[in-house]
Image 1 (cartoon, rainbow, N blue to C red):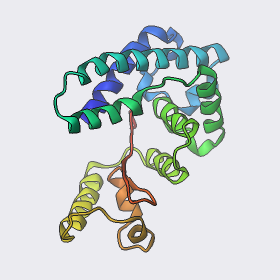
Image 2 (image 1 turned 45 degrees about the horizontal axis):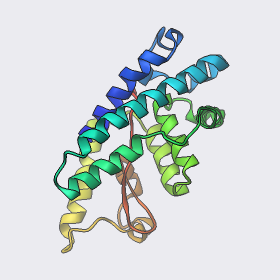
Image 3 (image 1 turned 120 degrees about the horizontal axis):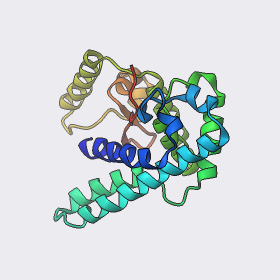
Image 4 (image 1 turned 120 degrees about the vertical axis):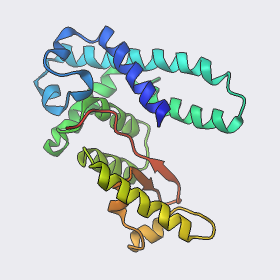
Length: 208
């Protein structure tokens, strides 16, 4: 989590360099949402996306250099997974711009911050599991999640694991059967797919 937070912070810093001044008149970049996107001009939207992509890819290269200094293969695998999630290579400005506009056509998505919408669009472009994408969007709509709620749901998750001899996660079938609450998993920022793989859900924007 620390790596992702550091990467996003650096992306935002680099993005400020590239994004037009109009984007920061009233809000910092991580607070801008669908209402700001819809109100923006076409050139502002292009500038926003160009800046974000440039910032993300610059940061990716810098952290990739650091990854090569890691000795543990496990650490490298975890680090590489995080880097790949943050990178925006081989995705065009037009794809992201159009994807964000389509995303915000659904009025229920407009509270979601643009920095998060960008990565939802990335998931859609890359053909991620539709259930994972739907859960990620739902998780973002729930923000901000109260810390007490997060702590309570996290404790339930770890208690479930501790009760199992194999210390395993709830399975997809158990969640569907109601043996473990899907809502509690979302509150803890977790999604379990049909193959029982665990996914940590992201929230890069600032929600109040």
